[in-house]
Image (cartoon, rainbow, N blue to C red; front, side, top):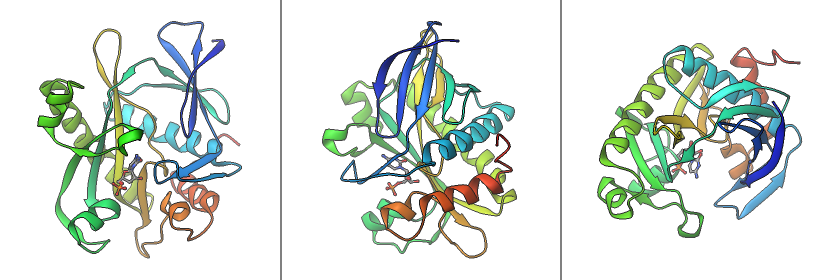
Length: 239
Ligand code: C5P
């Protein structure tokens, strides 16, 4: 597999073409951003940690039958994935009130909910990723009704698998964001990344935060937090 030209550079990853039409190279960067890019920092080691954590999670999801774009981890900071066209919808699953939901509804962060809830956001930096519903998706023509239904079902399945996986690691999965993409054959796959950048992860007993809120809220060392997650997931298997 040969890494070729840069296809796209995002806030946390660079995506490269490969000599195989249906595969891409993903390179996880050391950049940390928050609040739609308003807060930025370079944090040595972040790319490696997210590449490793994301690899463990994608492999665990695959083992439970959840199709995703991950193919293989190829270096400390790189992985090969299947090429998809990303659907511009961020699917957020929440188990506990936190973050923007806490602000929007005025409910204290940490409040438990009777059942998980799924939210859709329109992935558009200029608009600040607004909250949308199925009617808005139809209006924007960014996915079909069936695709939205499938994404929501898959997101809840991911939640079930990850809740168990993290509890075994003594971690509470508070909420997370997923992105999906379509292959050339029109198959919907879980894509992007699943890491402490995209999940809220709290210690099962103390509620200590081990996710990007550490950076967003300046409450500790991001690399210490992500290392803790990697270790608890049985990681650091590549060093
Ligand atoms: O900010 P909010 O509370 O809506 O975030 C919900 C979850 O989605 C959090 O785990 C957050 O890290 C994740 N998220 C993300 N990328 C975004 C927005 C939210 O990974 N653009």
